[in-house]
Image 1: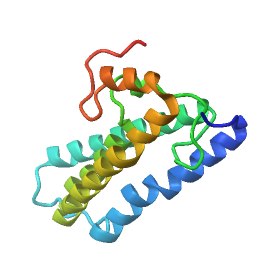
Image 2: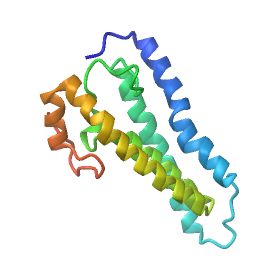
Image 3: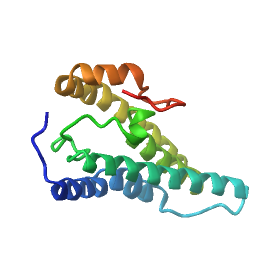
Image 4: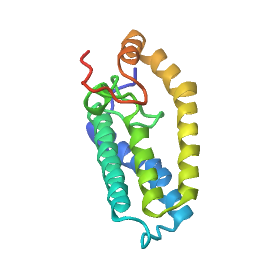
Length: 168
């Protein structure tokens, strides 16, 4: 278990990590690839609507998931984890809502800017995230939280959300 972190320090660390990790992965790099140039003159308007919904939903879920970490007196950063396992909010439906939110933001931009480069980047991000989750996060959470995490893992899917919220 992590040592106690002050609420202010948890919020500052969480916001800093939000800008450094997802800010770069879901914002800066897609901008480098696509230039955020909209080429939608030939695309049906529904594509832009779907793209904006994907981006907005991704941002909303990302902010929600990050706030849960600060409320649990820690950050999503591996160097400053929470005091307790986060199994509330979106985490009652899926174990990796932050990664899914980031992918939603990236894929929304791929649609909006009609960028195959951003689609390829999303595939690379997905492969990297899955490798990180399997190789680092799951073993670390198992070591830190033991049976509590294993029970959570048995009941909440990693990548495809449950229909109903899990209740411990």
